[in-house]
Image 1: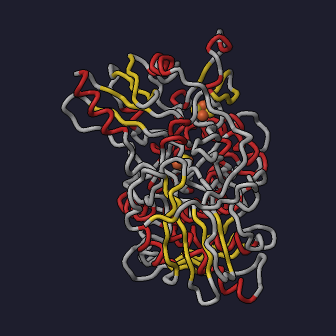
Image 2: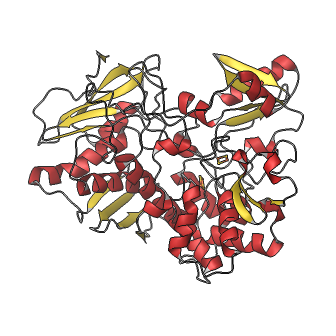
Image 3: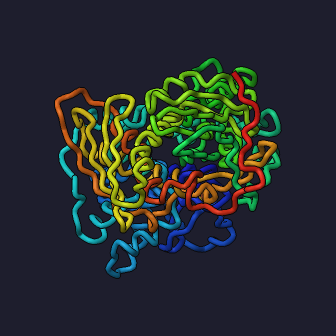
Length: 520
Ligand code: FES
Ligand code: FES
């Protein structure tokens, strides 16, 4: 209702009607509520406030605090988070970090890793100051974001307040709406009617066990690792729109979803349907469409010997083309790994996702010396050099806290680089320990709700301290090195178990990933 009929753009649709991501949070009589599961009849006679309706001064202070702390990257989740935090502040009681992290349990963010969000909340609610607030040049911030993302990204108060320019927000009001149905798309005048015609049944978190779809090759290995299907979990579902004869809107309006939308099919769909109908067309994926049809990093099985030689088997979905560039990526992480491909039944695989192949190999390379010496546990520093020259050293303490040192050439914008490092730590901890979606032996994806992906919530995210070491070199990506070094440090801290995610139960041990045929 708020988005489609009243054209309010600050409440975002990250999962509707699952009610699980918090992106659509508004106030009902001053209390934070997720709009997508609040029936209109329940708010009859009550006041509904979107972020557009906050007092100007409040909007300004929240937007500025988020920008100063680096608490917004793509800015898709932040309007909902700000509404939740602003409601917390409206109760007139002192608000501490614990209360903020509890309030954030209703939200998910893929980009920022929470800590900067807590710092922004502290600046507004607790009278604190963001630790790295400084005069910033928006062009240098965008440059740094592009190195880390990697995609064009602007930052600033207006982005945190929801003005990132997302395709779903900029589509013409008279556009037809296209949503997936069967092997094609259905078109209708509005999103609810199109979804109604598509006959969508909402996805659920399943009880289907996790599977490691690729088996470890035979060999005299000192270290092995199997990974499973992981949802990249960018918060803004794929969307595009196009006018007849025009160029389609990018699904990457303000960030690259860490490679997840680089080859989104929706721009071509919008363009084709606009040409066929002679009307503007907006093409939209729902959350479960993203899970079923969006790319996943290839699940792998690795075996490595004491000299760093071994085999990395990469699962690729049957029907996917060759994983172009994948073997080079693996070689950059650990040159002694031969790459084999195994066709597996499952959602599409892609080398576009953050450090795919390289990060797995770099993690094994980083952990190998410790495996050889029989030293595992917390407190072990892991250093990783990124593919594009950045470098990171990460140590996870006995209390779970994370110490990061990063070298990424000329810093350009400290706030942005730090924000990406915090986000990389959060993403890596999730990847190693918690994140997975169940895919059955026939390749069908079963965990279709955004909460089932295992994204680390704010309350369970440890404290992270980032030290940036400036140098005179060209600016290079630093957060991918942080991502791989954190993953290796977390794996070591957990004792190098042979299967990720290390802290999820419910595996299909009857089918430990025999791996199928190795294909050329
Ligand atoms: S869109 Fe409403 S909670 Fe996700
Ligand atoms: S800033 Fe939270 S999902 Fe991008």
